[in-house]
Image (cartoon, rainbow, N blue to C red; front, side, top):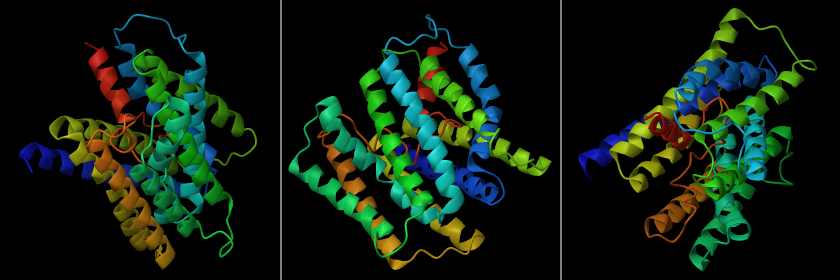
Length: 317
């Protein structure tokens, strides 16, 4: 492995650690405050630094999308994935949430067939089937009671997958500003409206923690940009699966969460299938590149996906 690939892998590991810390703070605050309230203030406090980048965008055009359906669908999916992800992290063990969210790249592979016309061979089809079986092992329907947190994690994974498909469908046809701004506005509308139904006054320290969530998401995104600039994508992407290790560590020491045998077995099957799909991506078997091209967990509106941040930095020139 070259020095660049080692540097890229280490930067990606650090990025995933920050993303996991971001999720840990969500879980801590979720013990006291509604998930939508946490998401609202986190997104609100992330807006100023993002706005600085948006204002320096020098590409010409309006804020009206050329493809309103796909932009609207992607924006709605990002809001849904953010809301569902925040709720799932607030109510479920960390390792269990990540195991379910790791199904997103598998769902991208499935959805790419009807929505993008991509052909999925027998090898990737079997890998997807194995990964989805892993999700069922984690959930254990019938053996354990499934709550709203499980449904939220599943909905977050599905919404994240549809969002990734929409990005692929849009390509470079839309300004980066539109792809970042529309989901943020949608989030403010949805979560802001929810404050009228469920709001709990926040301590100053807790409000500051929502700002920490925003900062961690942005810093992690920029670190991931540096990681992909330093190393090859197929060497950097597998580091995303380190989030399950971060989740187990944080859950063990902070929340006294011990992953059971089913969660470990299911997560292992999901990770193995994802790594196999990644290997197929390296061989050029997939145009959508579901593992290489995206972070595995849901894409919250507090932290735009790293590829959009990278595009925005390029567009400044």
